[in-house]
Image 1 (cartoon, rainbow, N blue to C red):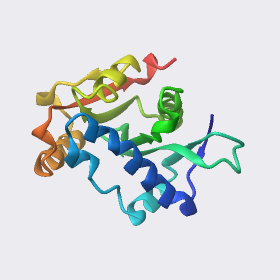
Image 2 (cartoon, rainbow, N blue to C red):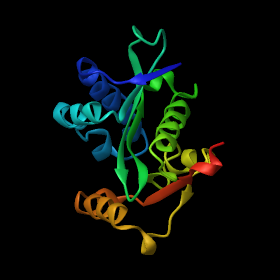
Image 3 (cartoon, rainbow, N blue to C red):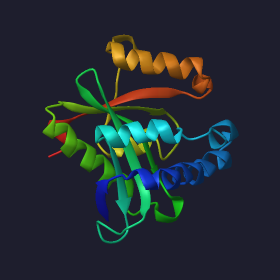
Image 4 (cartoon, rainbow, N blue to C red):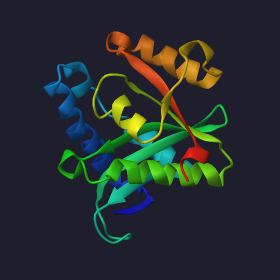
Amino acid sequence: MWIREARVEELPALREIERTAGVLFREIGMPEIADHEPLPIEVLAAYVSAGRAWVAAESSEEAGWPVGYLIADLLDGDVHVEQVSVDPRFSRRGVGMTLIDHAAGYARGVGAPALTLTTFAEVPWNAPYYRRCGFVVMDEAGLPPGLRAVRDHEVAAGLDRWPRVCMRKALDSLE
């Protein structure tokens, strides 16, 4: 699997990857999540411009078409995984972990001590998966301001209809 920076011309494909991956939520009784519209092209383009959007491609680094992607923010001094999606046809092949490892390398490069993310607590390919990747659940009461704002936005958007958690992985645990 090749990991490289995303390109603007690939952004419609990234949206389609997220839509396709979202179908799995319908199968576990979360149709609202399955039907949620991916981030707009303009928002994804801002991640590309900032150098915080990466794709996993099945073949050569230059020509390979994306099968998964990860976008990240800088938040509270950490690198925050805003979205990671993998085409279900490529699931269980380490694509998500490879993208997370790449984000960890980026985090080290910018001097961030950890990766963070928010996710559904009980969806098998969400919090349980991230636990296997070395993330730990954070105490909601002690969230730093940026993560608190993310969680407040999620609550306002109705995502707390299903249990959600903030998770953090210290970079020294990524070695």
